[in-house]
Image 1: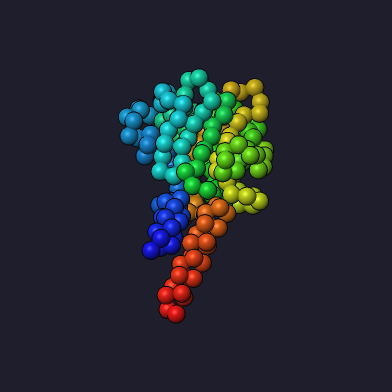
Image 2: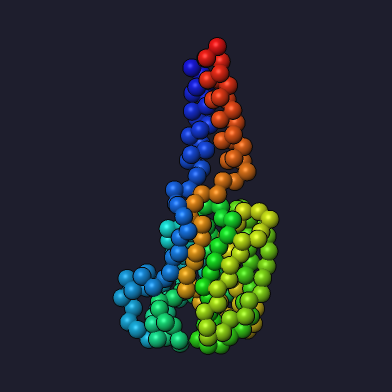
Length: 200
């Protein structure tokens, strides 16, 4: 009985550590922007350094918070978000890939840096340079050596604003971290052993 309780606790811990999302998820910011009531050809401050969406949190290091551009404002086709100094997407579950749709702010163009971090949101996995212009540029990353926890976009030049983020696509299916996989495997082995012993 005691063994059953231990195995149950291990199994519950494994299930709780898994994400409830499923499949590929794309979050574009048009629906969010429309819900704010910001008129076309205008920009507005979200008034917060961060926003939480299903599957990730979007944050900026700037003092003004996130900026929301409405359609028609400096070439915006839909509502879109940008940040000051840096714009960071922190995923709610470990990722093995992600994709960002980006363009430059206000037609200035320039080089931005994309930094990819591990699941502790601190360990730098890779850094990429990306040139943004008036067209939407899609950046996809699926080749890191470890699971991804966050990605940050920052401007290299003198322009204080980051490139504009129009959408985030990510893996909504839970990708278990190694420790979770080991825990789950241990629980399954123990359960198999218990069943075998009871059959005898």
